[in-house]
Length: 460
Ligand SMILES: Nc1nc2c(ncn2[C@@H]2O[C@H](COP(=O)(O)OP(=O)(O)OP(=O)(O)O)[C@@H](O)[C@H]2O)c(=O)[nH]1
Ligand SMILES: [Mg+2]
Figure 1 (cartoon, rainbow, N blue to C red):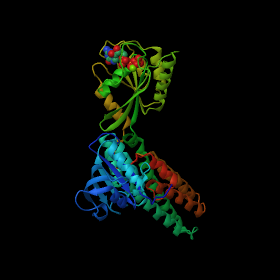
Figure 2 (figure 1 turned 45 degrees about the horizontal axis):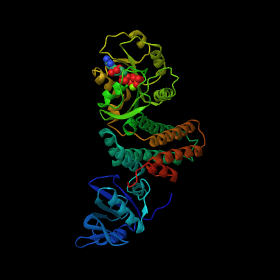
Figure 3 (figure 1 turned 90 degrees about the vertical axis):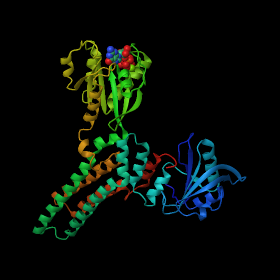
Figure 4 (figure 1 turned 135 degrees about the vertical axis):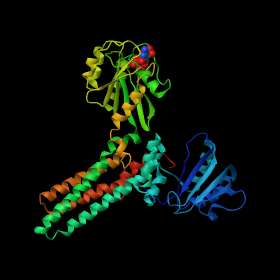
């Protein structure tokens, strides 16, 4: 990782047409560079402006002094800025040309093009926010629903870091208690103290495990729940997709084998973001394109969080349907009996043997769709009502670190119970603290930082 005392710049608004486009500059040279490419309408310059003020004028190309655009320039002086460095934002007219030209001028004046997420990374390195808060910034940008946004904002506010800070403090306290007894291992009274230390550690471990456990459901709000619609050809998978999305996303025809590829889109059910997939109908086929489509369908069953397996209720159950039921064994799945607007010819008894919940639906009339939606919500978010009130973990990095902390604590508790030398115990406790510290960035390796910030967009 290069550090990072130079001045960086990037276009911070989306590329394309828009009302305004913003070029953001951060670093020790930010204000001096702005001075060179900004000509005020009346008086004043970035270098004489108060922090937080806005200047009106023109951007000029320092190469030939030609006016590039009419702009507003905001100046935020260190440390009262997003990065805690001097920050200048040049508000140009939207569109590709003006912002690009402005950025180029800024770069010729000595700024370097920012890496993805580098502004936020500086906010972290300069101590304005911790790592979970930096990650929350990225989560806010990509938030898919209001509920995802609420969770990301709570993380940005510091909800998760406060909770982790509490746990960390308790762990340090308990560790200190243990070290205080190091000289008196044989003492009778001390046995009692060890038991107390052990039960404290067990309490802390439980808190960590509970927090880690929230990931199972909370993750859906950050990454989306992946849900696959599968079944043999012609049962109505694409019709169901279109009905759920309320648009003609996939081609529907009476011909079996219409859908050949995986079709994906997003759906929002009560704030739960769902990545929904329509798949090619599964049957035995020698046709090369269809075979590949079916391979993708089978893969979707494997990887999806939730499977909607469709059968056609207006026809008797076929060999392919029975194979499907076999394929979804062990998956979180629902069996949808589609075409329930037509007379039923399917054997419910055979379907019941699957052990999955059965729901009659009609992709034609919309019957059963509300029941399906609540099944999707409820079967994936069984504990969410209680969990959403507290602090939750939505990021796999955080969960992994929590699990490593828990494993170290487990070993530490084991060592205590076996009366092993205290040094071993201390090592485990130290490791637990390190893993915990990685989450907020108290303890951080460069490669972790690079990995986190490289997923950001440029200009943030
Ligand atoms: N009556 C009735 N017809 C339906 C229903 N759902 C789908 N269909 C019809 O069934 C036919 C096949 O529908 P699709 O949605 O293309 O089926 P699919 O499962 O996507 O088919 P493939 O892509 O070939 O695997 C079309 O003619 C639909 O209009 C339903 O609930 N009731
Ligand atoms: Mg289809």
